[in-house]
Image (spheres, rainbow, N blue to C red):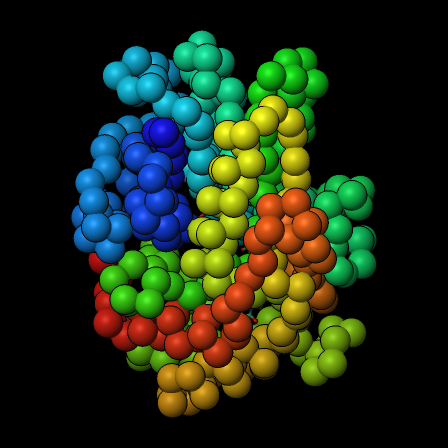
Length: 336
Ligand code: NAD
Ligand code: UFG
């Protein structure tokens, strides 16, 4: 069977493609390389041990999509392609709505036209908003996103649900990721942020490698055990395996399912710094500062539904996440 992976050259996509290449699925990557490098595609092939098809192109370009569906018999799509920088989304919201929402609509139209109605979508824990109390469960009401990026994920979830309501021959899996960190054990692929990282782990690894002088800890007066924000960090390879489980289900029968992909455990910013120092042997300079706008105190998953229905659970702990993030960063200080 052949799987189209949009955004497959990116951080989570590349790790998922490596795991897909170890199964019997053939893969086609479509990526416009706006937030990734072609080098990652070569490394996916190297780590996966076999070939794949790569199209450099945009999900906004219907002709490119139609070309792919005409040239290949695509059985299902894993849809990662999106812009994801929370801060940037507040500066250029239209670009985010266009790329993420219009891009997904374009993709779904091309899929429907080609008779391919099976999709696994990258959603986010951000859709739970700030009011729900962790552990977060899939049946909780959605919150209000605090930025346009988060709103695109809410809109796309709604659009995919409406597509299914209108035509229940579709098979759709909405995967709500928690905080993805770590890298492939080889140190050959990993997260490669452009410019100053937004997220905690790449910031820590850049401080460790000497690219940034210190980490700013955003807030120390939250209602958490040590006052810093608590999140559910999940190893990217565990997340990748979750996609394969979701894909297997999507290919079996029509339906629409929503799954949290998290570990169910929360770690504070100071916990992550301590775990990273232990894993790397490098001291992390940090300064405590004000809270970051839009942040919440605590966010972690109830991952039970994915285990019950998909047989999937995360198995890699915080130490392994830090060791693997560090191996990637120290072996590739300038990224790809
Ligand atoms: P990433 O930026 O590394 O990967 C996204 C890929 O999509 C990039 O390679 C980029 O070049 C490509 N892309 C973007 N717009 C495109 C377009 N119009 N056409 C073709 N390709 C396009 O990001 P990631 O961390 O791997 O995230 C993958 C998905 O998971 C995204 O949808 C993101 O919103 C979602 N997500 C990520 C996290 C996280 O912690 N990293 C958390 C929740 C959800
Ligand atoms: N943090 C710092 N300093 C930094 C960066 C982050 O103290 O330089 C703190 C934050 O305040 C928060 C924690 O580290 O308490 C995690 O922050 P991240 O920016 O790494 O992650 P978020 O939880 O804010 O959000 C991330 C993605 C979202 C996604 C969400 C999934 O950025 O897109 O995880 O739950 F939706």
